[in-house]
Amino acid sequence: MAEHEAEKILQIEDLHTYYGRSHIIQGLSMDVNRLEAVSILGRNGVGKTTTLRSILGLTPPRKGKIRINGEDTTRWPPHKVVRKGIGYVPAERHIFPGISVEENLKLAAKPSGEEEAWSMEKVYSHFPVLKTRNRQDGSTLSGGEQQMLAIGRALMGNPVIMLLDEPSQGLAPLLVYEVIQPILLFCLQSGLTLLLVEQNHRMALKVASRHYLMGIKGKVAQTATSDQLMADQDIIKQHLAV
Ligand SMILES: Nc1ncnc2c1ncn2[C@@H]1O[C@H](COP(=O)(O)OP(=O)(O)OP(=O)(O)O)[C@@H](O)[C@H]1O
Ligand SMILES: [Mg+2]
View 1 (cartoon, protein in one colour):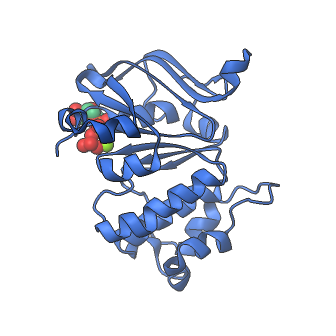
View 2 (tube, helix red, strand yellow):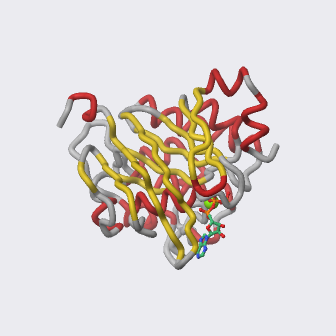
View 3 (tube, helix red, strand yellow):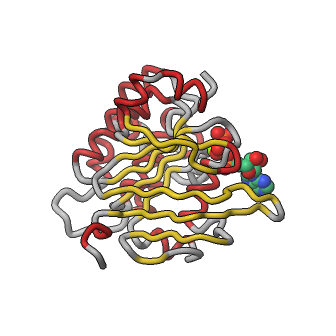
């Protein structure tokens, strides 16, 4: 492997993904470097979730290439992709019903020899409210608590890259800026790589340093750094409903 490729934890090249005959992603290319946070910004329906589902193998692409850590994972089944160290926080959160908060976390645990590894106690130290509710059925938590549980559960797998689908969706600004944003920044500082799908560009600009603006036909219309986006609000207006 060439040295410059070793830094790339995720590479997507000319991706094409369909639902039946509906051609959603039409030639998407992007990459994420190790220890970097990158966002995908775009309006409703442009294909942000479909991009994450393609990476995870949930909706395999028909054409194009996906590489994780330099290995070609295109069309791998999801369980195999996840074993490469991918954590996923889906937009719908998918908290397992009928089992407690604690069991939701336990089920996701993947032991790691690392000193900094995630454990239930470490998740509780970031989200104390989950500890006070540890015996409660996870599906009966409030929306904000479920989002914390979904993030905590992904972290229990000790991933190397975490894919988050609109983690701020439906949450009060206070929760977004005082709970969700800090945990993402903490993850980043402690060595995790993040791919963040967002419509809340305010949070995305704070967490991620590079942004892929997705336009119609599931293509990247433009890439920009946070500094560029802050300096030119027109780009945001063009690509996001603000
Ligand atoms: N299972 C499916 N079957 C058919 N079409 C689908 C399916 N899932 C999504 N689509 C269509 O694919 C397009 C992209 O959807 P996707 O969910 O990826 O968009 P998105 O950018 O995540 O939007 P949002 O911001 O609303 O979450 C939409 O037009 C949607 O209707
Ligand atoms: Mg979506």
